[in-house]
Length: 182
Image (cartoon, rainbow, N blue to C red; front, side):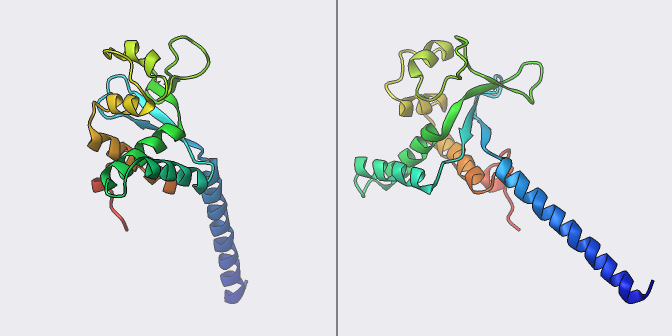
């Protein structure tokens, strides 16, 4: 085999390898439809929220417009905060806990065995389970209670959700300040 033929063969192999890598990357990107993001402070039970991807950017835009109608332009913090909270509520697919014997497995928080996990809109059912005094008035109140009324923890959780929506392969075990960008 001549040197030129050998180079062509290596180029062909490299081309196939990169094509395989591209196909694998694409397959991984489109296969990610949901994510479990643990809630800070609930490490013993492994309580997490399962989220889905938005159907389109229009779904997120509708959340933003609704919040903008509720708060004056001068209330920038409230607008941003409640947009984050309402996005969490809208994309929530349910509450889950880690399986006690296999922490790599998520189990629906479904105490009445209805076949549907409790979600952020189920404040009345969550209240006795989590030991809250009185049921939260709204899904926003459920989010606040789940995070111990710590707005910074809510925003950090929302940031992880946003990072996942931008890159479904993102490492969510790190906080933003721990992420290195190359």
